[in-house]
Amino acid sequence: MKPSPTPPLPTIYQLRIVLRGVSPLVWRRLLVHGNTSLAHLHDLLQIAFEWSGEHLYDFRIHGKNYGSNGADTRYMQLRDFRLRCGEGFRYVYNYFADWACDIRLEAILPCDSTRVYPVCVDGKRAAPPEECAGTWAYMERLDQHRSPPIDAMLVVADTIMVMLEADPHTSVREALGELDDLREAIDCLEAYQAFQPEHFDRGDINRRLHAWGQEEGETRCR
Image (tube, rainbow, N blue to C red; front, side, top):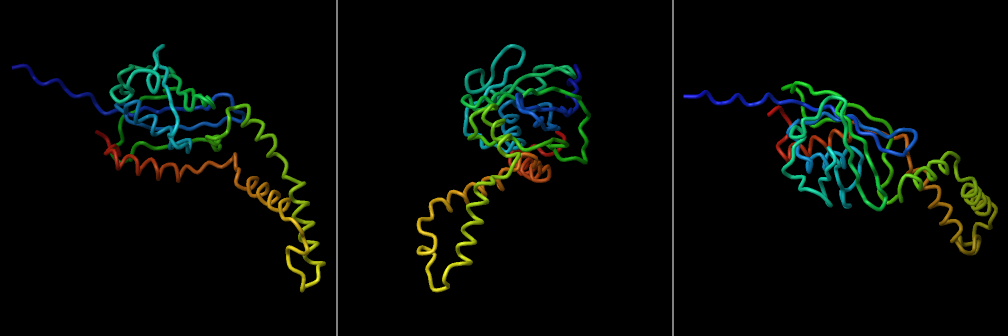
């Protein structure tokens, strides 16, 4: 009687994902199971770049597309492609904005039974917001963000001065008149404060990756 074939040892793929066309670089380093499906890798990339998964996507591997306009991603696993260390492939999300990521296999590692997978081990900078219309629009937004919105700050400062100098019995409407300029200035300042291109919270990403792994049953060596 022939012995049963020995099942392959669990392996971990160390992937470096770089968002194409954006400078300074936006990138992540993930450790994922080698038998992660492309559909699940799509989920992990959405978490790593803090996107919502609402748009179409494709992987381009060895000259073939997998995804919304290609082959089914549910049944193709990373290990099926027999990638060599240093070899790469492409991931595109949101065809309108065309967020393209270059993914490179940096290493194939033994699975560590003490570690939880998938996990983000490194990265830099926040990914562009999904609603931003592509890399050029995002680069323009970065340029605009280098200096605070002085005009909006002056509008708020002028408003404060008017309120301080107004008769205490005068209403805000009487003192300031129409508030459209003030509202617009406040919205501008809030948008400036909310936009944090250097922000990268690995802990938060890993909490969400861990929650995803628990839901999918993919947290330990298997």
